[in-house]
Image (cartoon, rainbow over all chains, first blue to last red; front, side):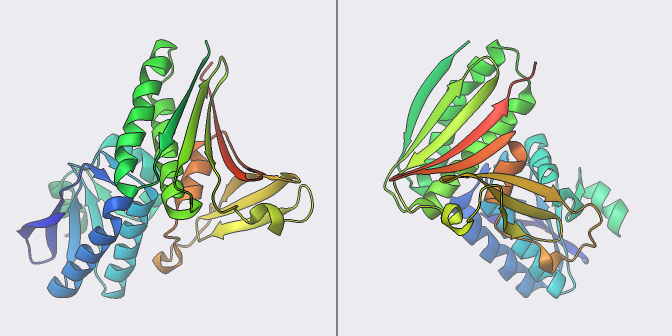
Length: 112
Length: 171
């Protein structure tokens, strides 16, 4: 469901290998991200370019993962969001919660 | 312009994607033909997904009906089942009284009693919130429907639970 694309000193770039990120995947996704945070003790930048739909369960899993990251003084960052996903995040104002960037390079410039 | 179709959902999580695609596949040409913007279809997509999620998580029934009606002024979607009633109707005693359904640092979601068997949902945004991630809600389905819809109501007509979502067409 997720795989590490790149390991940097300050973050892991992680691909989300889903097109429809919904109730069927949310628990597993949350568990995998939290396990990765615990193991690597680094922020996770989620490359969302393959994801063309998210539902409330998946968004809840993202929020849970972010809470866990913050408790470890790390972060969960969203990269390469498709427009529909971006619109969904804006609808429920999660764009004010997550750091969102168009590309990894944009995220690097903003955060490192 | 008038169209009406009923879809049956088997309340299995693995069927959500297919059912959602089927309903949207029916709606897309109808809305496009009538000059409705992408935004309306996107809102419908969010709502259908959450109605199906709600069915899987909460209905307790084996099957859910999704009724879709398009008329000259609105797209109306009903989610109908005979499962567990939503207790909001009984919890709110008086007409026009309201109850907080959920809250976090950014939103308050209310249900207001419309009549003996119905509630309507609405949402208020906290515009001056100080972000505390630990105070964010993780259950977002009703909030998404409420914010994406122009009207969102629940009606209990024993033994039927009827969630109705209305999206006004662009004029």
